[in-house]
Length: 447
Image 1 (cartoon, rainbow, N blue to C red):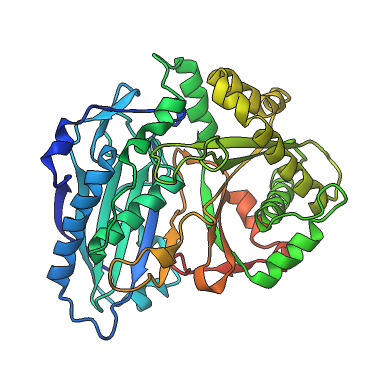
Image 2: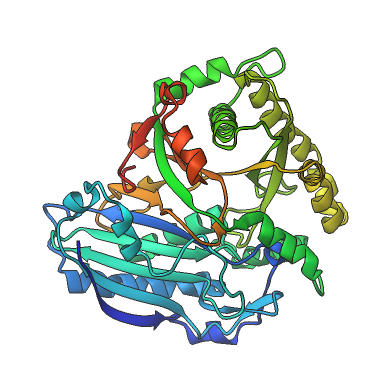
């Protein structure tokens, strides 16, 4: 497969009034997050009855992007001293490319590393905070008329909810609909509730980076859990202490269990294990925040497991996962009224204490369930045939062991994008007990 770049430019907000806006303040949570790109890919087949020409389609996408950036203007700027975002006239790198072949044929290829050519930036690795754009976009047009819209979104100011609301706004403007934010002043609410510190201790930033990024060879595989599998896992995860586990709790516990078992086989020993999950703060705060509030408005929930028992019970892990979330929810009032640094330290103490004991298995889980729904990202050509949070194999300094959950759209299942150490993954993906509920997905673009 051949990808040929046809143009590169910087797309900026269409309203010059945006350039006169004051710097957009980061929140404390934005400050402590290292900069890296999360890639999101939307694939659209050309409708049979479409009369749009490619040139017209591409011109419309750029114009509507400029309108969306009027609303989400911080995405057009650059980070200043890890305290705010300014220079909104810098713009968003915008790449157009032609892909030789049909969309359906390309995604059916067994070798999927070609997908990297559709990305405008390298994902899931540390990037310079002050010089890197908040957003980079590549529009890939296939010979058949199909289109892949790919965004690399900086985690410095874009969490999963911010990504989702931005692209829905862009798509609405492209359809000719109203993509405007009801209350633009609420974009800033994150930094008002959790103001930035004058300076973040460098050792704190370094520890965050070393926690999230590690050297080593990692492999990524995708597994699909259909409705029947999820129902069965929810039943198995039930216990007297957790009678009604959600689909997310049951699936996270299942992935954690087999991640630990694979690590035991690959390393030849049992180790304490830490699972860190992200939870959206917006609906948990009082008052609730709108989905379009920009920034890293999520909390981290830590569960620990320190048993060397041969059998790891799913219901026990599900209870630990649910208990950690319940404890976090109870602490929300304290987060809103207290010392944020102390709160964060207290939340991460279990992981820190485990780390002091020696070598530990760390797993990180982020859920995009009920957040990024491809059915709502219609640019005017209908719903995407697929969406993907892409991650390729890595042999460099990148995000460590990670589970990403996303909806399967009309199929109602859940896809888990799983990244593990290469030796651990080799055990994990061949575990027959795990595969009793999980179906491998070779297609990174399949919803």
